Image (cartoon, rainbow, N blue to C red; front, side, top):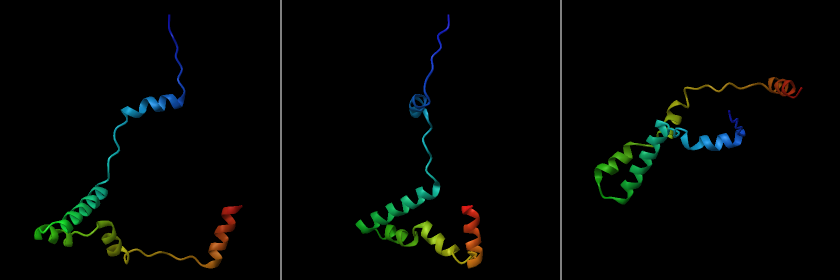
Length: 91
């Protein structure tokens, strides 16, 4: 004799939640958080090495944005091209 059990998709999703692998934090996020932590600790202490490190290490995302801002060229569309693209997307 065999017993057949059915489970809804929502119930199966709730049952699978605890066994999911934890989501990994990206390396850049980790570095930014660490740089912020070093800056906060440097403000509260009199350690000159820590303050020097905080001055050298800037938030990487902002620094990289300004370093690479001139390397990318953003293409501009003419008014006619924009109007045509809008008309094509609505029809």
